[in-house]
Length: 362
Image (cartoon, rainbow, N blue to C red; front, side, top):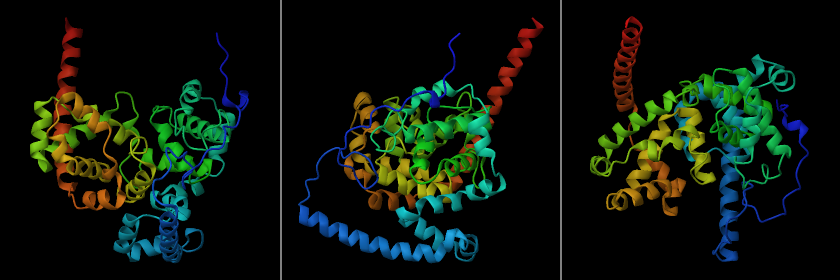
């Protein structure tokens, strides 16, 4: 029987050669065609604007986040508006912990993360090691094989697989943990993962990763209903071409867009997701389809599948796509389609149980 090896048994690989990086630490795919002088002037304007926003946010959250709860209770509309505009990148990690409820979990459970990482073993260790190099491979933090970034990612995923053995480890979880590790420590990332999957503030997400992916199935059902309601012509075209959301939208929900969209846009979605919950994933999905509606409606099956997995660059601008997403109302429809899904699923489960009883009797 093969001896199980944890990641500490592996020597770090060679440090990858230095390449130009963007502001988030990803390798630049191609050189910008923007003239150097124009690019610099844009950067100066952006930095000045960001500095003003940082000052507002620091005043709002206080030192170490001490004023956050008081401010959020007093001025929820201001908080919501500012989060939708985007959390300043230098404060993002702290604010994510505050709005997700993970900071409270961390304070209530001192030493638990260390216990899980150092003293416990997981049945998923080899699966985690195998998948680690697939998580943000173009980011400088995760590039070195068995280097610091990959070790941190392994530790967080291993700890969660021990903490919640019913869920264990599923591949899509790596993108959630990887994104969090770019903005906070291992322990902070672990408790934010717990807050999301166990539902510290919003509905629990663990059903996205349980056997059979039950919550993914529900969300895809709900998304299909929303497409028919908000984009009826496109919904009818999808039906005619036999396109269903499982062909293009599963990763949207499993990784909350961290896998499939450009990083700056994914971050803006995560800002809102952690504060408002999963409905932003539905809204952004609908906004993408709405933005590309006139092109998608002309395509046949094969080209449709490709287009739905490769949206055009002009659709990826957060300041264009997100206002469109915010304008779409989904709460009532989501509640109705959830009830409908549960009724259908309940009937299906009852019929399955009856078949099992029938088998036992004969």
